[in-house]
Length: 215
Image (cartoon, rainbow, N blue to C red; front, top):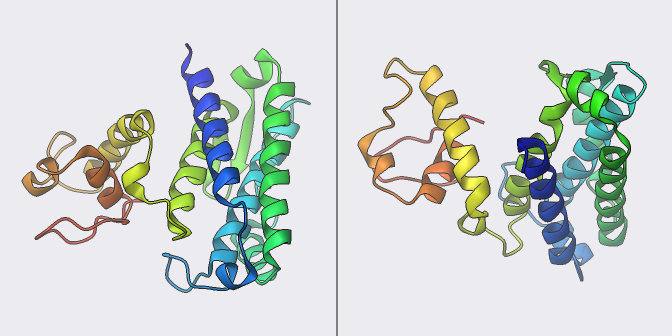
């Protein structure tokens, strides 16, 4: 299996799990605080949907040999769109997430080998290869599913996701320190991999260590 196929499968599985967990969501739940500071569950769901929409925009452009912007209006558009959509009823929020997930998967299926190999998209932080989109979506859908605070937690992140992301995040963490890429603090090395990854993402605590919050 190629890395691309692995990431596509992982993202699709994350979409399916999220879809399953959103069944029966109520208006009271979407108005409640999420696990992210200042954001309700509705904010997180809107972000998940707009993120999928932005990724689809880049993939669709790549199909025509063009460079599409994930958020044409930059961070200001991203922030405004999340704020504008957060207070919608539960049914509308869930439908939005499901529709944008499905549309992104359709865009993936329609992109040919050349688009995957040569395509480039523009994020608010700069250009990325289109081939990076599936793993980025896998990450977004998995982490923010846990951020909803609706019963799914970081402790349930899939083993293959944890293994791959832990390698990436350890390198990213080390690049921001003076200790080198192979030397996470001993306290972090002593805990389970999933907790170590959640700590690197700023989603879990490790005794005696400050939050890493690398994401």
